[in-house]
Amino acid sequence: MANNFTAALAYVYDDEGLFSNDPGDHGGATKYGITHDDFDRWRNFIASRHADVRSLTREEAALIYETFYWQELGCNALPAGLDYCAFDLGVNSGVARAKRYLAESSGTPAERIIQICDRRAKFLTALAEKPSQLKFKRGWLNRVKHVRARALAMAKGK
View 1 (tube, rainbow, N blue to C red):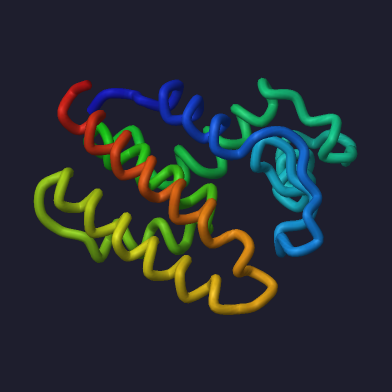
View 2 (spheres, rainbow, N blue to C red):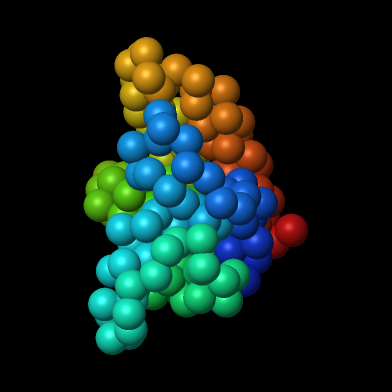
């Protein structure tokens, strides 16, 4: 299994952007997609003082993503493409959901990527039925579309 963390992280950074504090986002303030809660959890993990998520650097975000998402999901043991698919799902919808979708998928890596992305799109569509979340629907579904295409390309070695 190839270690695709660097490539997967670049895609996550592209999708997550910089600082955001949209009142409709249940995660609250985020930077590089890292919530203030995960930033606090990281600071506890490294025995460092809590800080405003705005102070988060890309380097520290990468460590958080590698530790709390990539490693937690066992992505280094997954086939190329499926590793990124699971990682992005974990970042966007939680590690527990990503673990469940991975465990419940079957077939070739490409088949599993398609199953997970289809299931993810269905979940996000249902979530967007809440009026407060509707404004995020198009962005969420575009992200899943991009993840599917990138993950399938990675699975083919591209």
